[in-house]
Image (tube, rainbow, N blue to C red; front, side, top):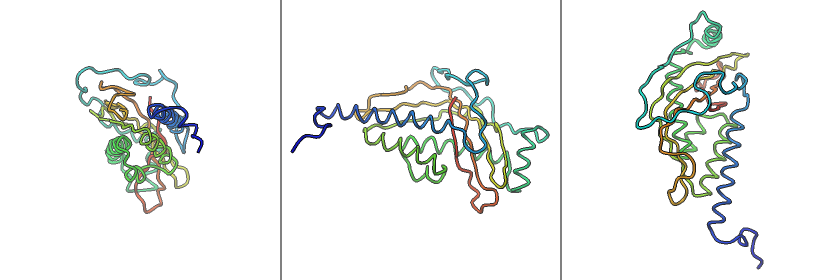
Length: 225
C-alpha cells in the first residue's frame, strides 16, 4: 500500500511540527475572530490611545497589589444613563454586582480555556465564541501541547461601555490583570510565553436577553490590548 504524504515526510517529530503549525494558525484565527465587532462592541481602539494598551510590562518577581478596584460609572454620565436603561429593562441588573460577577467569570473562563474544560466554557460563552475556543483546544490536544495560565492578580475591572437595543443588552468590561502564560510541548518544554508575570489588558463583551429567564451573561466577544 502506498505511503500517505504524512508518512513520506518522515518520523513523528515532523508530524508534531505540522500539528504545531495548525495550532498556531488556529490561535491567530482566535485572536482575529474575537477581535471582530460583535453586538454592541465599540470599534477597536488603536494602540496608544488608551492607557495600558500595547505590550504589557514585564513585572519581575511577584505581581503588584490591586490598584484600581471595580469603579462604577456615575449614573449621571452618558455611560451611566446607558446602564440605567438596562436597569429599567431588568430591575435585577445591578452594576456593582455585575462587575464582581464579571471578574469571577473572567477568572473561570481564562482558567477553563487553559485547562481545555469544554463543559465550563460552553456554559459561559456564546456559540460562536465557544466554537473558536474549542477549535484552538482541539488543535492543542492534537499537537500534544498544554497551556498553563496563572492569574496572579486582577488590578482593575471597569465597565467600558453598555447598550440596550430592543431586549438585547451588552456590557463591555475592561480587565487589567497580572498573569503568567506559557504553552508547553509534549515533552514539557516551553513553546510560547514565559514564567514572567505580565500585565495584560482585555476588553470582553458580555451579552444577554433581558426578558429571558436565563439570567446568565455570556461572553460574546473579546480582545486583548
